[in-house]
Length: 132
Image (cartoon, rainbow, N blue to C red):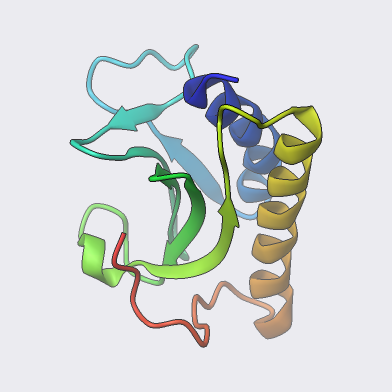
């Protein structure tokens, strides 16, 4: 499975949960709203969401799919502001639909948990700042 195809499927799984909680996708320059908002950086791929409660990223780098979050507005947040909320190992050469559904469900459940535990978005966890 191609990594961009996997990210698109994860995006389709997680975005409804984020959108119903006030987060909207961030479309990188040159990406139309009809496309999956994948941002390509030097060694990673990102899908970003922003909302009044902070920001969320789905990131892929080095066979790891990570859900990152911050309480800071996406336009003001730096990479160091994002904290790891969930991590799944992901090998695109062996991944199948079951793996994608698992990651999508895990990320969606994590978002719900972070919102409902505090009755508001609060991106705090035991993990240190993401070095992703």
